[in-house]
Length: 128
Image (cartoon, rainbow, N blue to C red; front, top):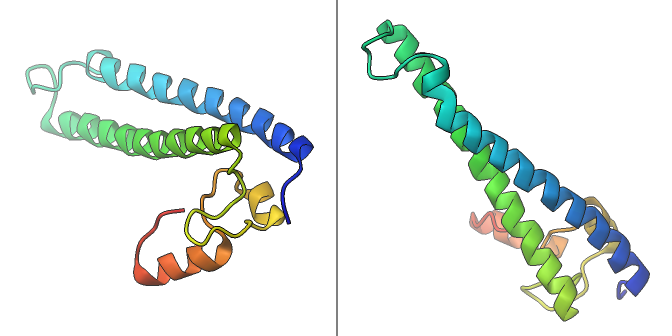
């Protein structure tokens, strides 16, 4: 089943909102990471106990992990929007068949139909 233009426009609006929110979240994390050491003293050990330094490093690593996940999400949303622009959104990038509307509703930035995704998952390739 091919997705209607109205459905594409509705999902596009959702994706654009999610993209804006994701970009904002990435910027906030960047700001937090940049100021983290100054907010909690220097991480060079001069002002802090060694346990404090490890807490700072741990928190920075946590933030960077979340940032990586958000960056991946941003990339997938941008890819979905480009596919909408060129008329290929909703078509599986692996087999060329339409992606189920229910799947697109739940995960509008997916690139694979459920069958191809399951094959990729079994092979250990986590692409979505």
